Length: 515
Image (tube, rainbow, N blue to C red; front, side, top):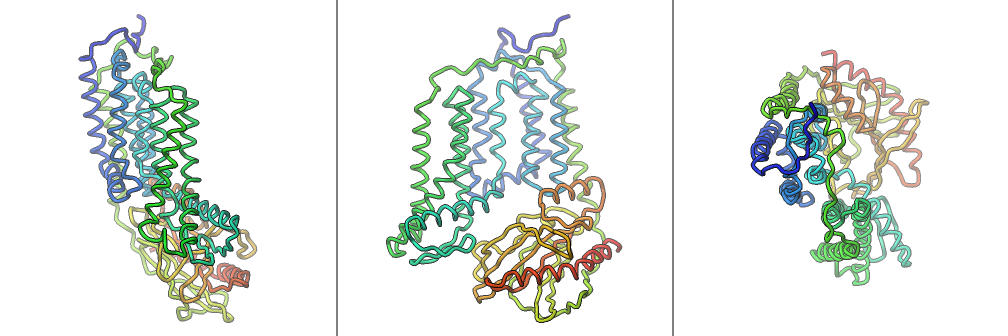
């Protein structure tokens, strides 16, 4: 008996009613199962103007599928058990992300589960026919904040370079710079992330609707990624020049934002206008050919209900296990205690700066002194990884934006020598309004191993938690005053302190774990 083809010459529209309604119902149930993950996306859409477009992604995706209805009618909906493999993989990814409290990855995994469920219930041919509308759902995930610092750096580099090209003298320190007419800083709002995300989302949608060639679609999408970065840098330079030429009377208040949005709007209109010269939307969509492997399915269509129940069982296992992990009691934890080694002695505080590390189960903050050199030590211990109490958290940082007393004038990862061994640390240079400057080193201890790789740390901690192994971690932060002309002396001080005291940090972890 030969296999039934997936695409038939004509299928009544009513043939789609039950599969479509059943699939929609199952997708709603899946959303309910993973409601905390979905609602975490909605919360970001509500509070951040950068990601407000997320409310429109699901309706747009549904509209894109609806506009292809005449092409979809001939396709025979048939469950495909191969979709369960992707469904299970996405569920496992969600479990790891949930264990590591990585919301963005959990949200991507949730969207992937929606797509995998559609594949499982309606078949590969249908998914292939609506591939772009389904992939467009990933734009609903509010992601991109990791680009803020790089974009701030690009904006500062471009602005300073252009000011220097015009002959204006510039003194720069990190993302802060001064010109004769005034002082400036590139803050998060100047990064252009909002412009970039809006441009990419609109650009990809415009390319899909306007072009038929995938090459043109790809090229325009790339342009939609590159243009806003340069446009934002040009916007920043334009604002600084307007303020400079007006003796700091213009482009400083609300007009600062008005000029920025007007400039960005003009640039984007130009991008779409230029792109319209190669538009192909007057041509029909290319015919959708089902994958060659689709015709090899079973000769008899599988019943939808049993497949739907199996799929829901597969996705339900992961949140059930995650709930059991979250219900476990926290271990007993004594206070952190660090013995003084290498001649370092406890001393009175020498700085008002306080790092912003949140959710720690135990914290130790102590100043030390040796031979006239002062070092601040702050340890933050996380007994187990859970939401709002994570070793790696975007809310853990040296200084909050627009801090009235302190500025972060440079933060990067550097290789240093600690006790004769090369070690990577996160280094920051801080400047206080009282004139004090601090050189800061930070790293994490996981399973007694130092690391500053947040991605590897998150993955290791999530795997440990899922496998019921020890998933605690310690943030180590040390700081010392420094002078711009003698920064190497501060580096030597921190290196000596770390080499002397690090054995005590390890014993502290062992002591806490032994309780």
